[in-house]
Length: 469
Image (cartoon, rainbow, N blue to C red):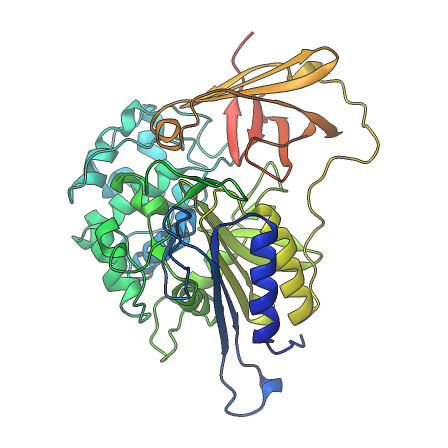
């Protein structure tokens, strides 16, 4: 595949233009292009970074390429990488039951406690309720305490029966890392990833991020920005989403995955087999539009018109990060923002970058049909519920609606305790579109049943079971 060199002046100007267009207070862009044979002998990798806007609309502090942002759930791929290092070392296998590593594990379903494996956690197929954000304090025992309380979490679907995004599973993976290494998750990430990769602006704890210019989240951007009420999530969520970084460091991590597990100086971080397994197909996604069509080990997998990309997004309280790798072209693109949703920016910017550099086009953005689609909503009406989230689907005045009520720690932190009511617009059989509050983009809503007959709604990457009528 032929690649085009990075035009730094063009992308610096274009990025600033698009960030302003989409009302994002501040953001960073990083592009990595590995040297190829066509570049000639001795050619070096290209790394381009730029920043625009402000870190905090209240202070006006400028965003720079050395500022740090919360990369949110992009952290999950970093946690997964350390888990795969331990697999490489023979400490356990992907099919090892978690209870063999953490004997005191006690989940809500005793059978799941016995049989859930490391693979189930890495692929979001455990069925453990994924949005348990219990704050277990700031101590080094935060994850140990968190896992001790996981027995109170619901089992949303039978083990391995479907895919549903699971933050809880990654906190549990973090605890596995602690038990096996004898280090805290934070220390393990530093020793096993940050230091070998030479990362100087990547941290896991708030007090570490504070030594750099650091972004503050915003619930709303544009001309009337709204700063998030708090900076971050509890330490117990660390392995699922508390890494803070800059795009240059994120690209160094991505480069390791593009080069079969090697750092810039040739040090091996992960085996070639481990890197390949993380990017390879592991399980299907019931809803294939929002993130990817399938999941690997940590990465989600995207079909870009016949080209296989891998990546991950991250959303914390008012911050959003996006990372995409196109392995066949040796290219990675990282964006960090301090606005809660960056999907419209992603759709426009990443299409321009990948089409310009390698003539690869992203799928068309998810939109409502130009002409109304006639779909009978009757089979999908009812109440769907999981931990902290209630989805009510009903018909009123000839239209189909979805009322979403969020509760618990995340709702309190983000100020989203009030229910949101939005029209569901039919797109196709069992597929609808909704535009949530504070979003410029439509999100897919998929209704489906498990092979055993249980009915589910898939929205926001989560599978939520239907309550019996």
